[in-house]
Structure formats: C-alpha cells, structure tokens
Length: 635
Image 1 (cartoon, helix red, strand yellow):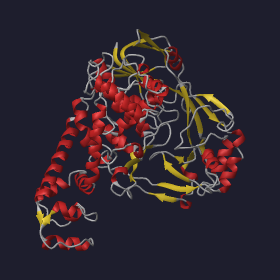
Image 2 (cartoon, helix red, strand yellow; image 1 turned 90 degrees about the vertical axis):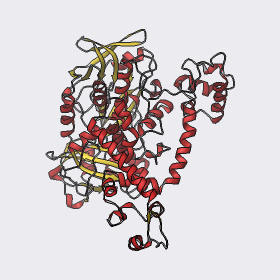
Image 3 (tube, helix red, strand yellow; image 1 turned 30 degrees about the vertical axis):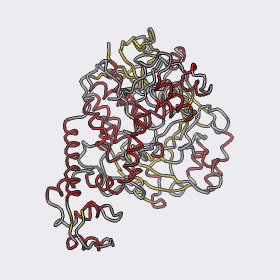
Image 4 (cartoon, helix red, strand yellow; image 1 turned 180 degrees about the vertical axis):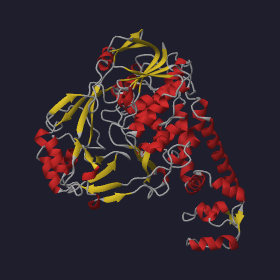
C-alpha cells in the first residue's frame, strides 16, 4: 500500500514525487524505464518567456527543476531585457545527459520514495475512487491517490514521412491500456501532436558561417539555493533557411504525414514545424535556425526551428542548404509524435479528476506542451495528492499569485484543443508576477507545506528584511544638492536646488539605485549590504518606477478576490436557471466552477451570465443559501 503512486517519470512525474514524498507520504514513482526519468525529450533547454517564471515559482515552492538546471546548465540568459521587467524571463541551455542523471540521483536520496520499472495498463476504481494500479505483468499496486503524468506515451505514434511506428519517444515503446481504462469510466480523450527537429554532428558544422549567440556575462541562477553559476558557458549559433531550403522542403509535401492527413492530432500554433512555417508564411524568404549544443561531452547539436516529420532524405537534403550546415551529418531525423490527452475541464483546480476520487492528472495528459508547464502541474498534483491522503484542504494558487495559477486556471476553465503553452500575455497581473520576486510571493506557501528547506527559507527572510531596510531608508532620508547633483549630471538628469527625499529622485526614469551605489558617500554601509543581497536592488527599483501601475493592479486584484470569494456549491444545477442561455448552462455544468470568479473566466460565459449568477449567489437559490458562502478554499 502506497499513499501516492505516480505513473510516468517525466518532468511532471519527478516534481510530483519530490513533493509528495517530502510531505511525508509513502510514494512510488513508476516509469517504463527508470533510467530515463527526467529525460529532455525535445530541446535541451529549460525556461524561456513565461516558462522561466514557472521554473522560479517551482523553486520558491520547494521544487527541483531550477536547482537541477543550475547544476547542469551550459548557457544562461535573461530574455527580453530590452523590454519592461514584467516580461524578462530566464532561460538556460542544459547538458542533456546531465539533467536526467542529476534528477535520478536526487530522487534516490528521498527517504519516502521508491522507484519502479513497470508498464501500467489499468486502474482499479471502486465507487468512483482510485484503489490500485495494474502493471502489464499482472501486479496490483494499492494506493490512496494516484497521479497520471504519461507525457506523449499514451498510444503514441511517431511519424517520419509516410512511415510510422508505435512509440512514445524515439526508440521507446508507447503506453497502452490507460486511455482505454479512463474512457471506459466516462472520460473524454483526444489526440494531439508535437514534433522535434533533427540532431546533427558538431564536427560537421561550419560555425564560421553562423552568428555566435553568447549567454550573459554574469549568469543568474534559477534556484535561490544556488549562490552563483560556475559552469563553463558554451555559445549557441544562429543561421537561416533560404528559398532553396524551402523549395526542397516543398518537394516532400506529398509525403508529409501532416499534409496527407495521416496525423489527426492538433499541433502547437506557436511552435510549428518547418514545413508548416513555409506553407503558412509563404511571403517569408527565410526563417531563423538556432544550433544548440546538447552538452559538454556530446557531439550532437539540436537544430532549433527545423522541427519536421518529412522523409529522411528530404530532411537531409534541405538541411544542407542552410549556411553552416552544407556538409552536416544528420545523426537522427526529426519526427512528429501523436498521442492521447484528456481535455482538462475534467480536472479540478487542485489537479484532481472530477470523476474519480484521488486520481490526479498532470503534464501533457492535460493538453500542455513544455517541460516547465508539466513540472508546475506535477508539483501541484504532488502537493494536493499528499494533502488528500492527509485529509487536508487542497492548495490552490490564484491568478494573482503565480503563473502556476494562471496555467491551471486556464486549463480548467478554458480547456484546450491544442497544446497549451504559457505566455506572459496570459497573465493579467504580470507586473506583479515577475520572475525575480517569485520567492517573495511563494516562499511562505512552500514553508507551510513543508517543502522549503531551512537554508532556502532563511535566504528568503534575509531578502525580505533587506528590502524593508532599504525601503525605510529611501522613504526617510533626504539628499542634498551638493551630494546628489554630481551623480545626476553624469546620467543627464536635472539637478535639484533644495533637499528632497531619495524616493523622489528614484522616481525619475533615468535614475536607479545602482547610481547611488557607485557613490558610497550617500549610502550607509548597512544599507549597502542590504542592497547587495540578491535581487534586492532590482525589486526596489521596479517597485518605485512602476508604483502607479502596481497600485492599479492591486485594485484590480481586490475586485478579482471578491469574485473568487463568492463560492458556488459543486452540486448546483445550472440547468434550473431558466434565464441562462443553453450554452452557458452546458459549459457551467461541464466545468463546475468553484466560485463566481472562475465562472467568469470560462470560455463562452458572458458578463450577463455572471451578473445573473451573482444574483442567485447573493440571495441564495431554492434553499441553497447555506451552501453559498463568502469563503475561499485556498491555503
């Protein structure tokens, strides 16, 4: 008997395993190949726009993705530096071999966790509650909760040209039986598609014909547990396709599984295959190609931007028309993989199934795409499966608290018919949800859940105190013209004629705290020490510069919170409200929102529908008034 059993060893699976085992639950992580746990199926990189925010949030809650990345990263960059701080995002190239080996090493150290090589083919459900999982060799493993994190393996099929084979990943068998078991219980399933580009040999690339892309001179760690990055940094390289490339690719369209209709699953819009790009954007005469190293000791390079499922010979001929790749040796072709998923309206905000008690879903099984989205869901599913076993209230992050909250809220309320990817544009409170303040937003949650180590929590408390120290000094200290005007002159800022507060000076767009740091005469030593604490200076500068916008977002959050506190009973029958449209009734009964705020975000629900629901909630409906309460279900 296990408290929590996790099926699948991808990024959702290992984060779920870390969380539930550290919360004191006897946990089993089942993988078809334990040696493949933590494998990077596609590109050898972690983070990126909005994805980097997720990794920082996972770290702040006590997860491992950021820490592992710091250990094996080979190039670190902060993206979007030329834009506002809300959209700055960390990204790292990582060592493909080092990532899973480090993950597995950390998993084996967990005292409440066991790893098992097995193929799960069935679930034992009794009275709509999970009781056990069944392996292909007939073993029945009892559990109180189970988390399905099956990635692209559910009835997976790999396509290369007109050929296909049953596989969940190149060279690995698919998972069969789970989809059929769930469908027999009344779950709705669908098909999605994703793809990956070819891998080429490093020694056959002419790097002199490409543009080098270097990481940051002073790389920033993902994890608060990492003091600094000392790993050797390796450049990536940029090149481009051309019209010859496109003509060759077009010659293989009649053998494309996507264009011939062999692939039924829907692929990601934001990361199309190269054949899809040249078909949809025929006016473009070239497309970017990034050559990304797969590790310190690997000869493989990942051809980012050239995802394809065309026949081998077409891939090889086309790739050799790209500058720098004229004589390249292709080590492995690109391919598309088609797999089963379960539309995520079928899970609650705590990642638990709406139909089977104790059964949780996380990762690509919910229709998402990306390591980071999977890891975030896995962490939340692991936490909530443990809380379920311990008879505690679920842990739910709201949209104003984390990108994780945005991700899960979008999945449950809007569901998805194509692979979902997180973007900064999806977060309406993104100025408050910056990557560099994830620890300030979420560390207390991680501590209360028992996931955050003492060392990491102490660092968070020191940072919090440092920000307070500097903030108090800024608001209570005046600066005189004689001391500040020389600094203002250097940065072409207008001089002052009388003493003013440092806060007023820092509100100027061209002035930052770093200018004060350069002049040690202005800042006392104890304040300098606080400013040197990680991210303190950036946090204070941003808070001052964007004070008006932040106040406005906080006002919006107050309204949002009031909506979230208007609870709706799970048993409420929306079909009894005659004034609601049939579409609204169908969608509300399908999603079963917890509160009025969640109901308002369901695709197809209008402001008029929400207003009508508000009336029923405030007055109570047919004796349900005791069930309606102004309370939240959030830790």
